[in-house]
Image (tube, rainbow, N blue to C red):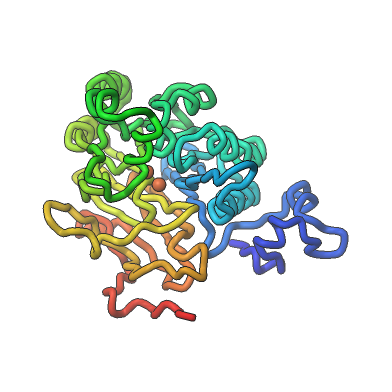
Length: 376
Ligand SMILES: [Fe+2]
Ligand SMILES: [Fe+2]
């Protein structure tokens, strides 16, 4: 695997069009298709589906939770912009080239047209990739996803790719009564849903109509077809107060039970999590914007915490990419092994252990043993 450093290029150089070698700029690097692979501390997730049998192996990239935020005029929060710009640039440079890109939701911070437009514009920097978008609550609650849908189409859908069935869910809807009858307007509703710890929020769900659609959709899929579900919130119940939660998690898990190989990938939690429930492997993807606190710091009542890989005591305010990062997921025979690379922390692998029947962090460290974060 070639690392960016191997060819004496830094990501910053690639992004800024800085000359990186004689007569070579980012554009010529891209045009010449130099074989680069994203290295540590990069805010993108690469997912590899590997099969020993008749199916063709392929990879896809996963970018999530950029939270593009409009300040005023043409000003946007710079850190969030840079996270997405960087992910897009790295995606273009990945080798092997991903077959497509999934955007995991929360492209915008407050669902404004200006934020979505700015986000879509940056995503348009992807070099001829199909992009499948997942709805996040920050994209939705201003106008109930209207502008997002004008750009992206249906809010839930499925597609097939090289023998794998992909399902994209809109898991962030809530009761109609809460949505329509509680708030003065969309701005007030969005403001409440944008807060992580606001008790006036409401638990996320997919709703009866979508659950019925999912049931019908999966009916047509044979049990030996690998299924990958992409949602914004986890399709497992972790912590309700922050909507690390989907109300119908058990119903959805039941629908996935018949499949030999099932994986759920989700955003929203802005951190590394993994879990195994029966036949289903769960993996969170990291955010390009900021990390949320890890579950040691949640209120511990009625929560069902997956094993953690990197407990982080807090974000380092002087390092904008702290606790964002890069992971490579290899789903071999339906079992995910995930290789995490994080800045200022130890790289590690979470792999399925057939004897134990669940994923195991092969280099798990208790919080007290993690490398100290630098303070300045
Ligand atoms: Fe988010
Ligand atoms: Fe979210």
